[in-house]
Image 1 (cartoon, one colour):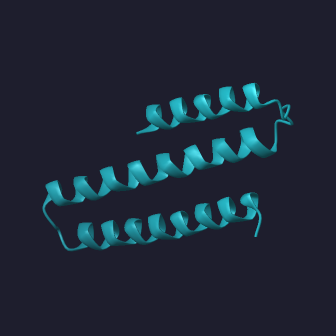
Image 2 (tube, rainbow, N blue to C red; image 1 turned 60 degrees about the horizontal axis):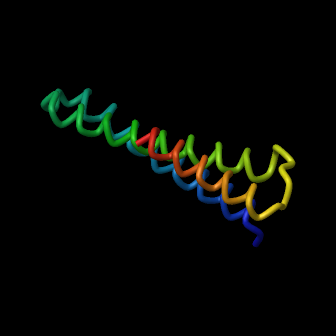
Length: 89
């Protein structure tokens, strides 16, 4: 399995988990669970979806932009991805 396939599998797994979290929140709201608990779950989903977004950006930069293989440029790209992921947290 190459890196791109592994990344896609990771993204899909995370999205399925997020789907389960959303369904859990729907049940919580249906049962009138305390708003604090619902908000904690919403925050968890927001963090999870931001992580997925970061992975999609990483995939885009690494596989869609057609950047040079120059090690110095690759290091710059890694630093950019790291910075974007920090921002998304």
